[in-house]
Amino acid sequence: GIYKMEKVENASPHILKKYFLKGRGKWEGCVKVKDEVRKLVVFKKINLLDPKEITLRFHLIFCRNVLIYFNSETRRNVLENLKRRLKPGGFLFLGHSETLPIDEKGFSFIEPSAYRLQEQKDERWS
Image 1 (cartoon, one colour):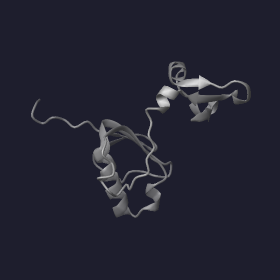
Image 2 (cartoon, one colour):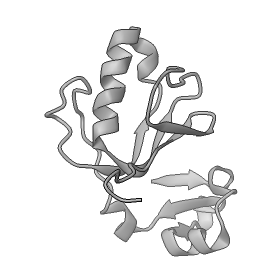
Image 3 (spheres, helix red, strand yellow):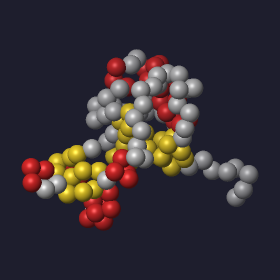
């Protein structure tokens, strides 16, 4: 995608150089994600309530401004399905008006709208 510079102003110069192209002419003040990065991203329309629909495990899941439309039971089911598909140590990003239930297990709060799935300890070893 193409973004205004202020959307990526917190990114380090290294990240900007590695993953983005700077706009010129009418695109001055914008950046574009490099094609090699864009090819790694797939957008899919899925049913969040059907665990069979999500077959891969991810480092990042963006589920923004979705949970607010569900009742608490449906939210829990969606979160459980997302948790199963998040790799240990992976990140879940919710919308600004969304939070995890207070008793939701397995996630660490990072900052508003950002959570990390805790690594599972191997109880067989100490």
